[in-house]
Length: 369
Image (cartoon, rainbow, N blue to C red; front, top):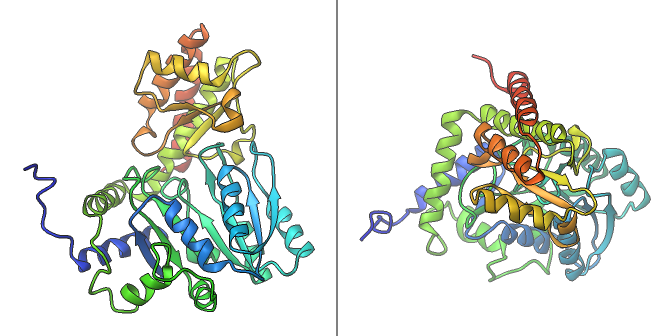
């Protein structure tokens, strides 16, 4: 039998220790629950635990996940105020403040930190301050931002922070986590519609695991995924979180500089300050379908981390992923070389621009010493 499948059982103490390491990554002293599934599991659990008939939610939509959150909130019977902005930019704290002022009954806010699907990122610190001043709870989808940009859960006042291991952390997709503030627990406990005796129940986890001293797991853990999560936390600790964040920022800066130098393509998110560090989305010109371009790139190199945009964006948006192990100069340069070949142009200028942008971003962001 493979040694990877012949392992001693993962103990409750091991599971709790991994939760504590996730809490440290999130910069939180709040309870952290590691869930055995892709991050949509704790995202839906957080919404269904906190939203209920009679509540009013501000759902900030800067990409497809915001649209999903709105659907869940409505399913819970909440009145939903959608604050939708174009997918090629970010929402501002001023826009959020205006929405809260116009709808004073809002008591829950859902926000995506970085949208890998559209390549944008939102200013969470500023938005969280506005939400906290209003008195609402803030749920943050940090699946694509954790380990790629600063995530200061307690300092910012995020009440429900959901992460997954499969993007910048460079880990598995089958395990995720949510931190739950005391304010969030109070709201969830007071919600008669919160799931119970369900895989979506955060209260079940709290009662059977967290409040019980974390000594007996309520179910058999997904051992391989948990060990993989622990291993990627080891790798982040070895590199240092500031260096991991700097590497993702450098990858984004280099990819955007290289794309601009190619001339035919333009960044889908035009402002650098609004660009996510985990993926660069590229707008294709009329007559060049992103689906066809992605297919050609993968024909040239099947290992390239590229794909067309989802849904209606598939015709005009190419997505270049540079998270986890792909946040590297080699990956950026290989992608630009393939793009140049597919477009029938020279790669030298784009690759030089990318190298210069990488070096400049790394010098400004990487830890010294």
